[in-house]
Length: 320
Image 1 (cartoon, rainbow, N blue to C red):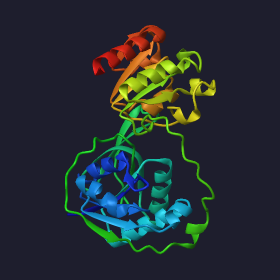
Image 2: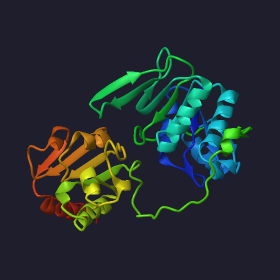
Image 3: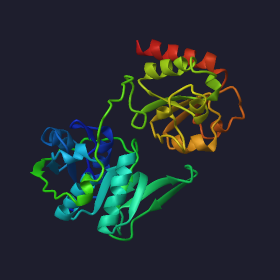
């Protein structure tokens, strides 16, 4: 069966959920071959095999941590030359999209970014994307070369499919450009104890209607009761009520959780572009004409200062 390259997204060797989603999608079109760059490849192989990887190519060179992007592109190109895959799948992060674009240029292939679905087609893999601020859904395929595809987190539910895996060392020759940009320092991100926003299965976001930084504690309490991530609209972020790293929207982060709760968010097109592909959307707003209700699966017309605490209490009661 044809093989599909999957770039492994990991932290210190621990495989992140988007990679498990890629392996699930890759099995639709071929046998997944995972490319694990950096330390912990042998240890990660068991997890990757659990989700269908038939082979894991590893390389622990220091260049992957010491320099930006290009060493990983060199490694993926080496894996591409060794495997001759039918497609290359990469997580659709900021770094992932740069890696995918550089690889596509090198191998002379077309690229699809931010895919939300993938299926096998008569003339090659067919991708689904949400485009123009999620106002349209398109289906497309690459017509030149081997498709390089980045997939948005939460596009597929990871499905285990245990496979016998072979772990092989990937030989990589680094280009001159690989050492062009050196990482001089790193600062660990302060953990909030909540899921990563772009990967979370549930997200609770607050907007202008929260009416102040202190009131975001209501949003956080609901999120914590659900085990959800916290998001914010651009209006809330611009007002200084919540960090920019939590902004959801066209100029912020794009999320696609199973559940998205929008509290005090009117639903401007810029915000909708960042969350419209969520599986279930719940809107809480005291304006029954708010645009957010046009795409909400469930809507509550009411004061968020009454609704959100009541919802938090109900969730907490049911969980206990």
